[in-house]
Image (cartoon, rainbow, N blue to C red; front, side):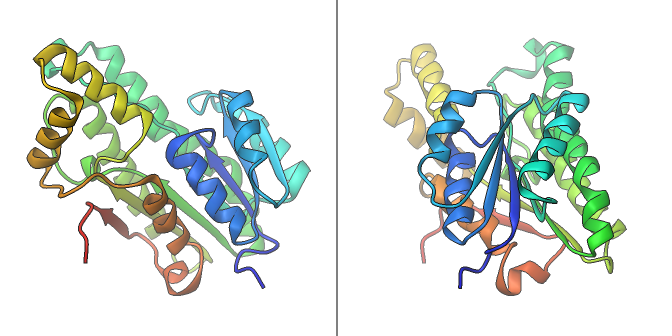
Length: 254
């Protein structure tokens, strides 16, 4: 029997990259999945790849009303949410002195308040049933500093803090809250950043990648599937008993 058969997972930012990998991985374990996205067409392509039942809702996670409506639609379609994966996010490389305040506000709205909105929408039903799993896709930037992304680092630190606070608040109530903290991941967001670095510096994208990995102390880039596997770790088996933990992925091979 699949380990997540009968479970309903809601994944934000589920239409590409890490989010799409998480959808495929949870569905492969039998979960029914709601994809909360802004790009419905891309989400439909991801949903078509999995064998379990899916539901798609369009919402900007920074919009509390839209998130609540989306979560209500998800529950009506597939039942109460058992697993919430807050994955939606964005990043842009900007020197601190050139970063306008609204960029910090937007980062916080997506990475932190997006997780707040979804968690507040699904937690009441989780508490009523006495079980629930929340996994926040944070970043190594949520644990350490990094240059040119102060806005992103600040937001991800806040998301890790939120993870630990909720884990403490709901300990003993059947709710687990954990964070996955990858380094650089092979996604189109990273590809876009590499293209910008290449254009500004004259380095090839391969050279730019080698430079940022060296600065980060990361031997290789992390694959989206590895992040999805880390999310799954907190949903099944011994990992499902953990709460308040950060799972760090830095491309270290055994």
